[in-house]
Amino acid sequence: MDAIEAILSRRSVRKYKKKTVPKELIDELLNAAMNAPSACNEQPWHFVVVDKREVLDEVPKHHPHSYALREAPLAIVVCVDVNLAEEDGVWWVQDCSAAAENILIAAQAKGLGAVWLGVYPNDNRVKGIRRLLALPQNVVPLCIIPIGYPDEKKPCENRYQSSRIHYNCW
Ligand SMILES: Cc1cc2nc3c(=O)[nH]c(=O)nc-3n(C[C@H](O)[C@H](O)[C@H](O)COP(=O)(O)O)c2cc1C
Image (cartoon, rainbow, N blue to C red; front, top):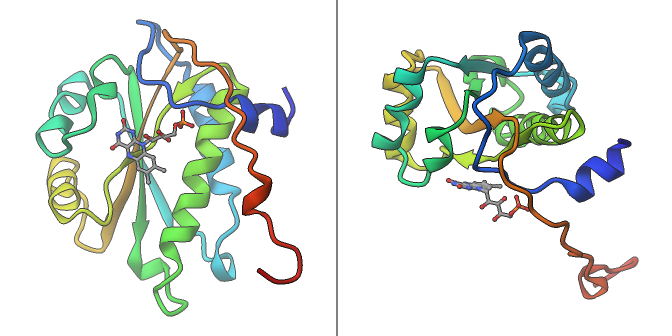
């Protein structure tokens, strides 16, 4: 599957088979994440891989839209260490979002399913997830990405809108 195919066929997957994802595959997704572009190449991200069922089961107490975690064998929590994001400290959301999107596309390319669960900038979610995962104060969780072998099939959607494209000026 080439990159465009993976991008166009990717859809949020929230149901997963009871099948373990091999560690090598998780590492491939993390490698894809860490090859994302970042402002001044600061690469300010950290990733918390959660595969303990008792921890995954705690997340919905702090995140109201995280039912996808109920069946997921694992999740990657994409975080920033704000001390690593020095360039005005304002670019890290974009840096870490690029890393998160790489994980979603890489998962699709590898036959896995995933979904982005937003954490930052919701204060309650940030505080709850920080406490649950024992993140230091300088670490902010941007999103949680449950990952597993898909147990639902979603069709591609044609979202191309020529009305949203402008050449040279609005
Ligand atoms: C910033 C952001 C936050 C999101 N938060 C959630 C969430 O909390 N729970 C969830 O189930 N899906 C969440 N999603 C997934 C969106 O619902 C999904 O991407 C959107 O409906 C489009 O569907 P698609 O991913 O299948 O193309 C989030 C996506 C983004 C980009």
